[in-house]
Image (cartoon, rainbow, N blue to C red; front, side, top):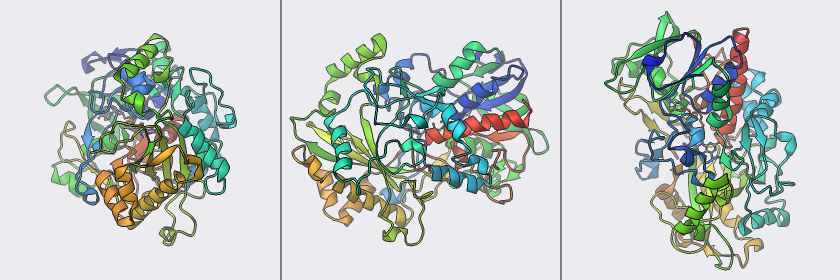
Length: 577
Ligand SMILES: Cc1cc2nc3c(=O)[nH]c(=O)nc-3n(C[C@H](O)[C@H](O)[C@H](O)COP(=O)(O)OP(=O)(O)OC[C@H]3O[C@@H](n4cnc5c(N)ncnc54)[C@H](O)[C@@H]3O)c2cc1C
């Protein structure tokens, strides 16, 4: 297919136009173009991934380093009242591959309860865990690390398939990882070992899969888009071009999309003969809907945008998960990653080795190799007014074990040998929003995760911190951990001190979802129905993280890939392809 860099170059007619060449958009484009008779165009605001940014995207060691660069939308939140008024950075991938090109590569697809809750929210059992199994296996495949370290006993091959997205476990095991697993053998009833959190049951302590294969990041662009683009003439992409509005082609029918390359640049409109698939992500999708007159009427009217369809839930129900690090000092005789990350020469050597043949220390996930997905005890008073998790196979919180000093925003890594636990609240009850503040697509929307708006969220975060403290206090860590670092020790002194630490240092894990949520056909609320078509409109389908009705108690990219795999089949069947 063709790669266009200017809308003026696009002259073909298309059956499907995919807005956003990100995680979900890449899957849709690749799967639809399997049908040789349909013509597919992808419109992506960012550039190509295989440019000067190639190493930044594809070197596993550099995961996280794209934040703040040209391939990041560089959004930020509104001031968070419960976080001492702080503003939180909201990176999103702005490049082919979208956020799958800049994320932290963790692959944890979510529990069976998670998908069963999606089925009940949408009123359609096709979204249940057991009915999605073929898509789960179609999306991903487990691969060996670059050094072929055996992963026997660290994952369950039965739950990994033959899909294009490559995943794998760490090539390099550290003292920390061995002790984390040893804690599960020594205290199995408190900290159960879970062979594979991708098996439907997430609860327990596990080895962690990342989207790394052949020593490189695997993402929507490398796994889906490029193989299709290289071999098919019916898939074209237009990069460096932003969709500025969806265009009505008949009453309540949106098969047009207006694009531009900048605020003052000329606009072009393309029309799909069959469907527009909106895959601009949990921020971009509600923004584009609202700019097109699809959203909360009063707010659109305030900006002078003619209302086509009053959909109050567009941009509402945003859910994101708070993340917070605690640090411990490690006896200097043990190897952690701290000295490596303090040593420019060692990092340079690892990157040079990766540059040779995608091997060595830069060729894998190294920072988090083991993880705990844990639940509050059933007796917890936090659950007395209801359980916000999807069910018993879903965690309330996560403990990610890191081989270095994980610095929260505002902290710096001191010299020395450290480990950390990053806590993520996986089942938040706070709800935020995404709103537009202008009728221009080139003005960033306002993003409000509304962290810790509920007592449950603060209480669960404190309970998770106490679990982290207890986990590292067992005999397994005697002689290895010296003790909590200064600020962590001070925070653990009382629940009041912990709460203050939470307000000072909590960040977003960058998992926003829910801003165009799925609901039953019969529900008056929600944005898309069970087939992901926008309710009340023709021609417009949404496939991305914005349709997820709840924050997945996992890592969202797995669920986004799986939903996109099924959505591609829904589209094919809707058009008898
Ligand atoms: C820094 C970071 C770390 C993360 N770490 C993890 C992790 O370790 N594991 C995990 O599972 N998840 C992680 N996530 C979240 C995960 O990556 C996302 O939930 C997922 O990729 C979202 O997929 P999507 O298809 O909804 O959106 P995206 O992948 O973001 O795709 C949206 C695409 O649309 C494009 N776009 C937007 N607006 C327009 C427009 N108007 N016109 C044209 N194009 C447009 C964007 O440029 C982008 O390419 C992380 C996210 C970030 C940002």
